[in-house]
Length: 115
Image (tube, rainbow, N blue to C red; front, side, top):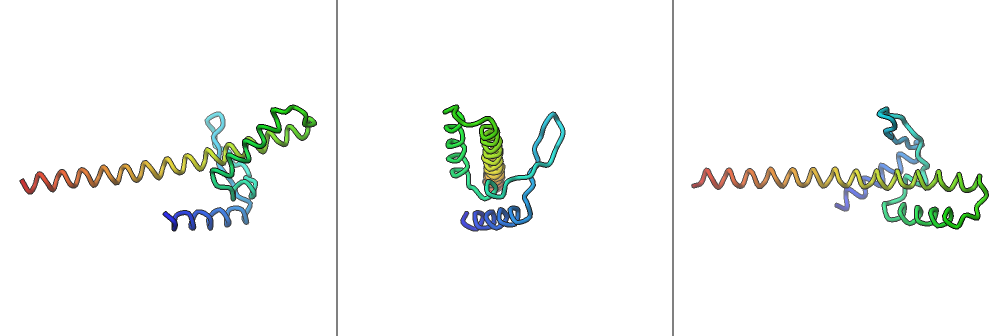
């Protein structure tokens, strides 16, 4: 698992150095959006903490409109980044579960052959 995190952090560094791009789905069409390198380097917990901070700022309601818009945009980017991480984790879990199902199927087949 450690190797995956190291590889992921190297990938994040490459992405941030190159001006990372993310693909989002909007109205059934794919469009590329630039990801803030600062956000791209955050892990899930960091992104959620930053999103909570942005949410609190917006809920206070005392930001000038331009600052509120910037905060909202940052919050949306943080939310997309956190969702992307969750999607990646979900995909990894599905691969692990599929592999376990294959192992179970093989074990059952081997057991049947031995009987």
